[in-house]
Image 1 (cartoon, rainbow, N blue to C red):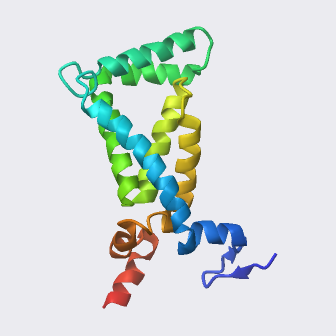
Image 2: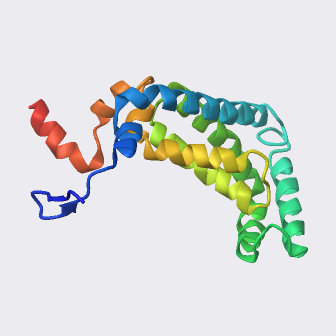
Image 3: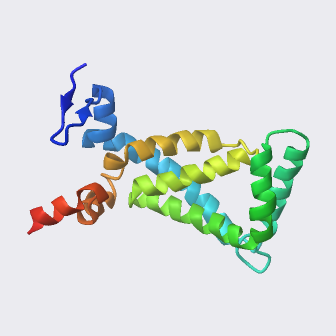
Amino acid sequence: MNTHKSPSGAILVPDNPVSQFLFSNTKSALIWLIVRLYLGYAWLTAGWKKVNSSAWVGDDAGAALSGFVNGSLAKAADGGDVTGWYATFLENAVLPNAKLFSYFVAFGELLVGLGLILGLLTGIAAFFGAIMNVSFLFAGTLSTNPLLFILATWLVLAWKVAGWYGLDRWALPILGTPWNRRGNRDKAA
């Protein structure tokens, strides 16, 4: 293994060539564009349907989510696909606040979809998409959630180049990174 020490004394292990290409090389950005657009479309269409449904954000907000949660609780009671700790969370936190969570889900899906399609804060959008996928999986729903979770996780890993063909190409240099903000300001001065 070809390791070296950083100026801080930490031992750095270099990436293998495949990881280097996929997660740090802008030549892989076309691959991530395809993944991003697929995932973004899935989230955008799901969110759009919910935002335009009165059972999610309208007069009857929370009704659809309450039905979903009650179905998950029934699976937990049968000893099925929902673990006890998650059923407790659904019963005590989500169900009493179904209207609020309903808005979170509907607009969260829409915003994740827009972020991924536009390539704006791609890693953050993919992270929150993955959180929603895991939430749906914990609630006992398979559907496309495993595939979407895997793709979202890969996009999180590829955050530096996944939005290259998108707004991140310009937004990330302007916003900087939390671990390099001081260095970015010093270079600009």
